[in-house]
Image (cartoon, rainbow, N blue to C red; front, side, top):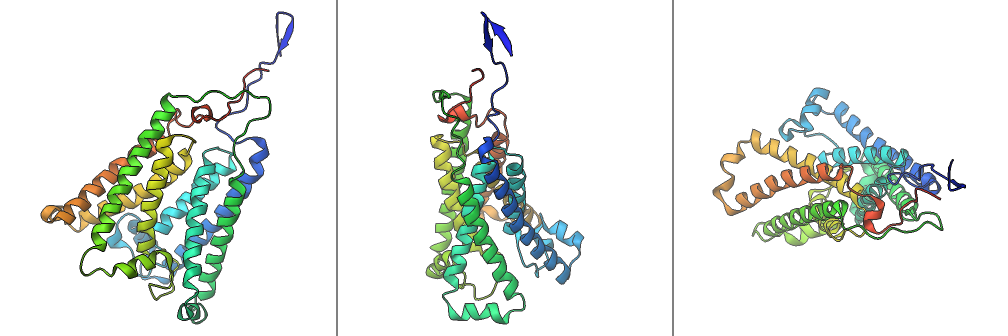
Length: 338
């Protein structure tokens, strides 16, 4: 407490704008717990796959970045490994009440909800339902899907209301047009361009004569299409899902109306890992020397190179200290004096 002109002046620091308000700590703790539970389930499937597979732990570690070294019997794939890291990172941020955990958790919740809905659609197929009873791991797979649905609903219900509305009487600062808004728009453009490139590649693949377009699109929303009981998400789901997330987050970031830094950071990191894995595969198979022999190969190589550069840029920008101040997005800023 200090004195100024005979009056008391409170010089205590205001709330940390990078951390959630105390009234939302319970929601953040709940989110951290449930995300950790699902990450633990994915780790369990990964460990079981290593034990049951022909490879060793060393082979698995190499296979994290080299697809050619991955044992074929793995029950989960690179998308699940990236998702596990994202879930654990988001849980850690939520446990420490970091505000950027909110949009990261909402992204994780929507992805898990989409997987659960896809599996629910697949359960309408009688033959697919029977596989849960006949497969030795069917019960565990069903329990994992149910857990994913519970986690998704809980996280979304907990984090949607956890917006940072500062205490009554605090004066809202006008929206800033400075550095945070520019960084958000740069990330938005990078996401939009990558989403459009992925969309172009997907459409190009779907229009080839040997592609069954109807079956592919059905595989995006129907878990019974592959015909086998898999814990790992299908390539149709991960491909189309990545396009949707890139475009949606790109639009939100470009508009810079709210801080979506957490979602940008988490998804960019996931995509960066998957892109690096693709680059390693292209290197070990010597595809680089043949990639530009066809228009499709050239487009794929260009999109891969851009994805590597763009996602690296987003990760670097989203971790910057000047990105995501609450007043930069029109939210109320905490006062420093009373």
